[in-house]
Image 1 (tube, rainbow, N blue to C red):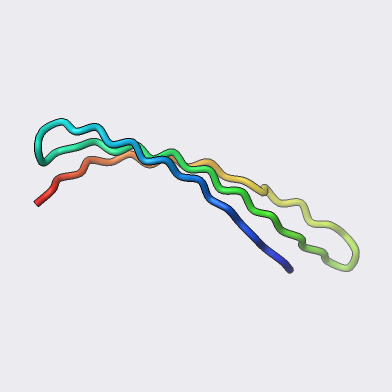
Image 2 (image 1 turned 30 degrees about the horizontal axis):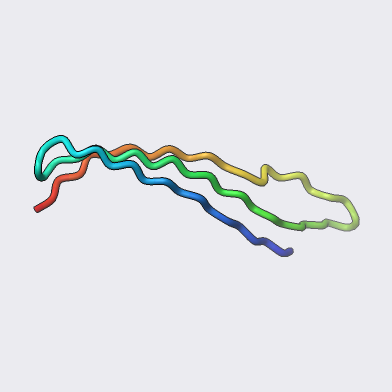
Length: 59
């Protein structure tokens, strides 16, 4: 089995006040893989999308 992957992530930060901010992180991951089982190819989902959101407070 061979597996390679690449990830692209973008971080967007919106400052609300001096110490508070809101974070949005869309992410795309792509896997390049080759899996064989007795000559039959196994199909997998080679990509994923994630979206992270959070609140940040700086101490």
